[in-house]
Image 1 (spheres, helix red, strand yellow):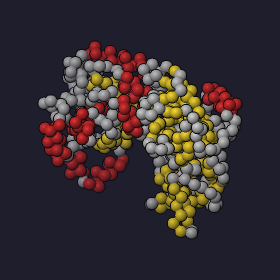
Image 2: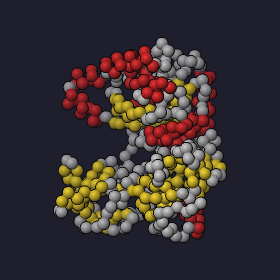
Image 3: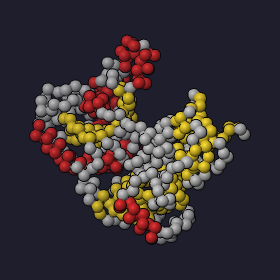
Amino acid sequence: MSTAVEVKELGIEAYLSRQQSKSLLRMMTCGSVDDGKSTLIGRLLHDSHQIYEDQLAALHRDNEKVGNAGEDLDLALLVDGLQAEREQGITIDVAYRYFSTAKRKFIIADTPGHEQYTRNMVTGASTSDLAILLVDARYGVQVQTKRHSFICDSLGISQFVVAINKMDVVNFDEAIYEKIKADYLKFAAQLNVKNIKFVPISALKGDNVVTRSEKTPYYTDKPLLELLEDSPAAETNNDFEARFPVQYVSRPNLDFRGFQGTLTSGTLSKGQAIKVLPSGKRSTIEDIVTFDGSLERAETGQAITLTLADEIDISRGDVIVPADSTAAVSNQIQAKLVWMHDAPLVVGKTYNFKLASKRTSAIVKHIDYTIDVNTLSHGQADKLELNEIAIVTLELTEAISVDLYRNNREMGAFILIDRLSNLTVGAGMVEGVLVSNEHSTNEFSDFEIEFNALVRKHFPHWQALDISKLK
């Protein structure tokens, strides 16, 4: 049912009420160049009646000028809006589209397949709960298919749908479908993701996208859209301990000082004892303020303003946690780093570091090992080139509150920024932390404990200097 028809039948208030009660799935399309990612999104929107008449008319006009689908309607034009994208028939930037069905709501990110735009793909993956991995049936699993799979897995995406596209070009050959499926499963056995589904499709023709196709009798599962509707919704991070990174200190008058931000995990309640990291200063929550009034309890994802019973020094980037928290505070971390700049990573160079609302400086002390995206084997290197992935050791100019990425996405993900160009050059996920307290809410593996001991031995003290060594 189209949005217009649903609004007409239910009325605007009933329609909005129904929309609010639906679960939301954030997902992305990824894969190698020209695997049909934009066309697939266009097909989903078109066949689920999510395109308005004026949009459809504009699509037909654009198709006559720059369409790349021959006699068929080039549905990729619905999401490829940049002139360069339309001229080359590729995706460069991330495009987000919202649509809904009778069962749920979706936000889908169309990410580029070109290797040079991997940084944009990482941006789309960072907020997604499910990845649709496109594979061209003519070429099978490519290097970019593996790279994107590894990045999605590293970013904590737990659900993959492998859409083997352009089956119409290979006459819906079952043997080709089964071979690609086997090849991908062989590679995916090295990843952590457990929920992987496969579907043979033709995004151009619409086979197995919204409705089942008679051309694939060997495929007995649901079409793609139904698989997406039935996928588990993202779980809130209420079970993990509370983390409230301060984004802004509100001081509208002499009688009010509030600390604003979004609760990234756990819950906080009025009257609860808290402490501020990294300083360790303690107080009690006096009030939880929102636009709609005060709350007794705040949950994960809520934007709130906290007022405290005591006047203590809290700045942007500090993190408010429960008073009994054993959260890690450290200036030394081990991380999985994706390098996203043409200029290689320089060991020992100072970069700007941003994690949640905290900004500071960091140096990469050394590259522990690189990861080959084809085989996931480890190698050695003294620098990282564009799109290379490695485990690295970083030292920060000050101690910060940090969590392992697998436990808390928001407090375990960071970016490195070049200090001269102000460009984002790397994106990282915290894998290990050298903690200054004896206990932590993170559960450390034997490897991490050994790593921490080595760091203590070789780097007993970090002097906070904001100047790089001369080469």
